[in-house]
Length: 362
Image 1 (cartoon, rainbow, N blue to C red):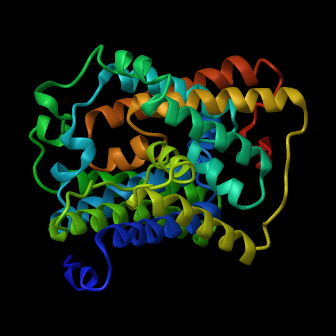
Image 2: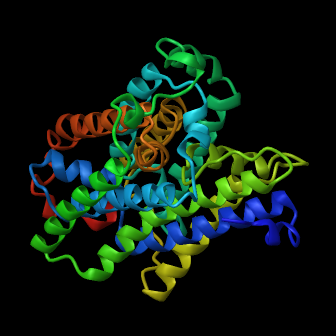
């Protein structure tokens, strides 16, 4: 996609911010309307059900594969140009960070992306948790926790100074990833029909995956035309949350895709909730819930930076380009979340049936 005409009208950094706003807006609307959340899917699985939450998550994940791999086949995007594929991956970071993130998102009752969407609709619990997530993520990136993150990430890394492409490692023929995405999507739709999910929710769930593809294509296109180097990235909330925090704390903040992404999600989710009359202020029910959410947010902040991304950044965005460490991190997020629900919540007497989960906890 040629963005040269846009570069004639906008500065490179401003165009990057605009692309972030567009990508975030699509994600915010789609995530709010579909109730997309990895935490909800893992809890449903832990309680013995392949229900509507898993259907939504699988549809988002699969459509991200379909949209991104279609863009690859059409020449609109090259995975090898993405940041996640061009840097050294960390196996140890994916395992430890993924487990920490999985534990944290169950304790906080939402992954980082879901917290941002809920905060945009008036959920004050998510505002507090989201701020803690951003602060700890920044500490893990450049602050007091950075040495610990660097040490853990360096324990076991990928060879040759770059990540491992799962497709290339198994010599998969062209179209394999697209076919896999279509197969998973078919299974997700079958689950959705079985649980009588309406088509609007399915469309919006696929919209979350579409947002991931939009981010990849826009940043890749900008990188091909811009004079200055541009990081090819898409939807993630660990790095952007930390960057957004520093945007308000420094005199001369850096303008890039990440700076537009977070406000775009907030605006999109807010407008979607406003139009659907789902804006509602909510707070912590008691002190124990607040302590639990704060601990979960802190674990997610460090875990996401260590794992190379959050539930969206590693689990969907990184997974859509078949970065090996992203798939490993996603697996560990599932393991950590399922184990935490089994050990913490189910032992505490929360309802076992997935359909009894309170919507306010998602």
